[in-house]
Image 1: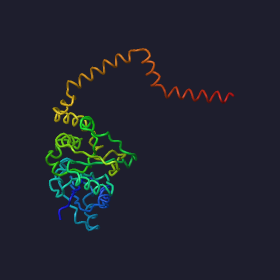
Image 2: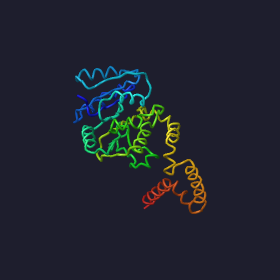
Image 3: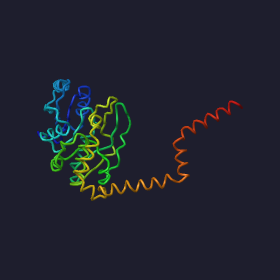
Image 4: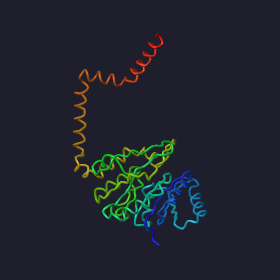
Length: 288
């Protein structure tokens, strides 16, 4: 029987978290899915742990492909290429999904043919435990800041038509994909529910944290790749430099006025002033 959704998990040295991630998958209320794990050249015990988990739980819908380390974009594309589902969910091997996520996402997509991608509110956990405050989505704002996490649920056909993940990118590859999907096809919907949990670690070795060193080159590549789109939305290189020049002019004018200087002098020292005030009050009370 063909599954309705394929969950694709790239795995690179995730022996400490992969079991917890799989537990969140196999607790889903929707059961018509397959799990495709791409072992992206792991050198730890990830594969052994996955195989043991599969054997102990007698899993018939879990498939593991092993490759040399090529990065998460290539790993996800390999998973999508072998996926049988009508929908795709990319899940990193240290993150979690709520038991209602697949059921809610697939049901909504089945009823709404004009929607191509659904996502939801998210929670950070691990070293940080709080709501993940993603910026609000709209097509133009998406060009400036990514507002959709990697684990959205996407129509496979749309993913393929958009060109899959760009394997040249080592960082923000999901942002690049969302830009293409949004501006080629549209159809984005966000649930108010919190169905996704993103792990933050102290040791900074989650997929996103490890790739921060690629941020500058990746941002430049993204801008050049979609330059005509940026330009058509008033975000071209000329507008960029004009904006910087105007900011500098405003800054010189704004900060040159004596009372502006006084305001910023006081603002920068507000903590010190508050400290002095409270200590002065305390001293007066002691005298009395």
